[in-house]
Image 1 (cartoon, rainbow, N blue to C red):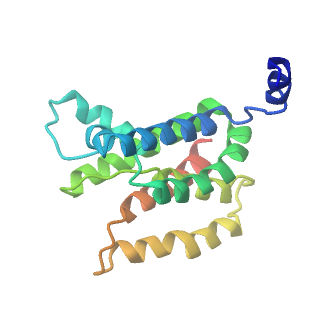
Image 2 (image 1 turned 90 degrees about the vertical axis):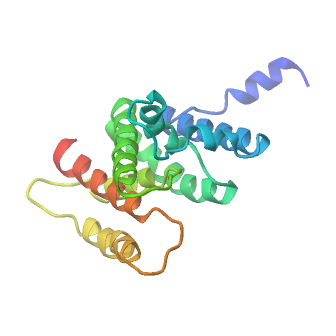
Image 3 (image 1 turned 30 degrees about the vertical axis):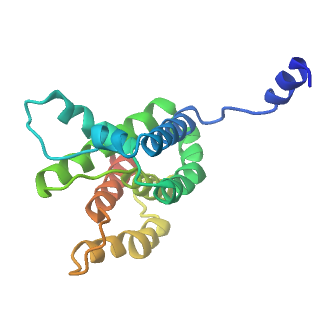
Length: 191
């Protein structure tokens, strides 16, 4: 196979969603390195209680959203992110989507940090932000989209119930709720 054929083949692909695809690739690299290094990546970059004087505490507010426990955790988050993220990135632009992802990760990390003793990892807060944001993407002034109500009833309300359930499942339902709130605020008030 000639190099020209490879280049021609690669030219058939479009990097259509710079932020979402880059987020996917970065999280995938982190997952692979974490697997190879037997958890050391997550141990270093994941959110956990620590001194507010330690600069890593502030870095982990963001990097925790790049860490995933395993392939299943990663896949479940990125199925939704890859499905709706590019649509929203096209609508709002790459810079605004990046801002929304970072703000959501920091907000859910701060909530988790002040409420719980244990750490948190993953991008599910951003999944919920994107889902809620998608449900109000075609909002018109003075109208409440029915899709927003349905998403809240079938997607967000379930997380609220699980958050206050006596059955614990090691899932950060509060991060899901914070992500949904961020999506609502971004879609309805800011953007």
